[in-house]
Image (cartoon, rainbow, N blue to C red; front, side, top):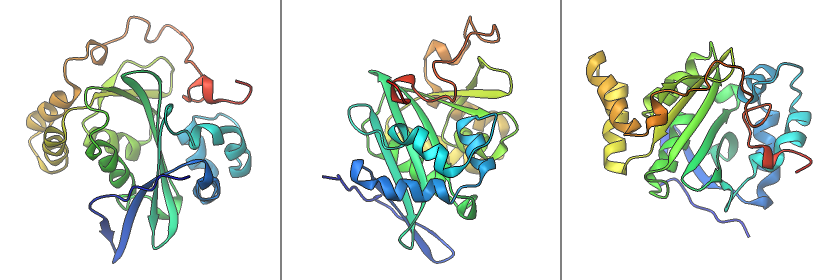
Length: 231
C-alpha cells in the first residue's frame, strides 16, 4: 500500500497549488510521467549522462532508484493541478548519510517545485543530524542556487565537470532561518554565515583528501550502486 503524506503548507504559483506526497512501488506510472515530461538535456544533467538520454531508457535503467522508499530512503512527488511535475529522491546506503537528487519536468522549472519538495523533506523532522550530499553538473546555476538556498555548502568534487555539495540537517527552526537568509539577505557575508550554520560541524564539508585525484564515484551517474540494474 502506498503511504500518502501531503505537504503541510501547499505552495501556490499562478493560482495553482503544489502538493507533495511520499511515493511507494504502486506509483510507478506517476514517476514515469515526470521522466517522460523531462527533456533529454534535463535528464542528462540530472543523471550526469554523457550519451543519449531518452526518457524511456532512463526510466527503465533508474526506476529502482527513482522509486526507492524505506529502508533505502524516500521518494517524493510534486503535483500541480493533478499533474506530476517533480520528483525528489533521498537515498541512504549508510545510516546517517544520504544522497539527494531532484528532477523537475521542463515546463514546470523555475516555479518553486524543487523548493517545495525540499521543504517537505526537512519539515518532516526525520533526518535531523544526517549528512546529505548532492552532485550537479558544473554550469547548472538553477540546481546550484536551489542547493545553496537550502543551506548546502560546496565541497571538493571527485569528478571534473561536477560540483558536490553537503549539508548536515539542522532542526526545522534553524533550517527555516537558513532558507530565509539565503533567499532574502542581500548581505553576502550574513547569507554565507547562515549556510555555514546549516552545514554544521561535519569535517567532510571542509575538504576531501581524495578530491581531484581521479577516484571513481560509487556509481556512474551519482546513483547508489546498490540500486542500479544487476544488483
